[in-house]
Length: 308
Image (cartoon, rainbow, N blue to C red; front, side, top):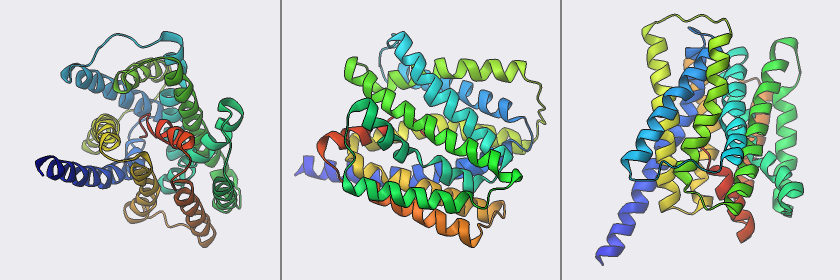
């Protein structure tokens, strides 16, 4: 009876964590926009991940996990895809375009995972996922059309961020199949290697910083909250809930991003963009349905790297 009650409380806590995480990760897109108003996107991307890396290594040490480096070259590749590529492209997309729109385009990641896992992991795409891919493709067309010089670059950067994230998920799947690595330690080390290029770009690229209260608060939120706390919450969720249920956080994140951007930044989607957003979110829901065991493993590993 006691064990059953403890398990129930654990699941209840996990559902609370899912809601909190969706709010944090969704609102992160708006806060990145606020941060890039006071500093170069290179400063925002580099500074954010350097702080997050330091915090995550402290968490690894505090929880008694090993600080021994994970396999060097595979972890560096993961860091370049997961941390360098995703963070830099995400930040540039938000700086040059709308936060809500970038959130939706960035969260096309699950569809890139499905497409990349087919040739690189030899994992078939089910009929349901083909349907989800078709919905997402139609939604993508509506969100980015009509293309114009003001939004085309930002849209391409956001889609590129999703592609980099998807590629990192497939690489993580291969890495974890070959090496026995602890997930939190792997995440900390890939953050370190991926943050080094961001720090170098930040230092060598001319950029402005206005040390306003808004900028300091924004950087604290996206590094401490969006990166470090977000990852700890995600680890807790995966330890308490099935991967398919945990995926609710990913489904809700772009919705929170769009709503937050509309409320705070007055980024109101056009009718065409809104229709595309609805299609993409619907596709995400279809894609998150329980799948065959081997595809459920892909979903777990696709979600595992920190998504901020």
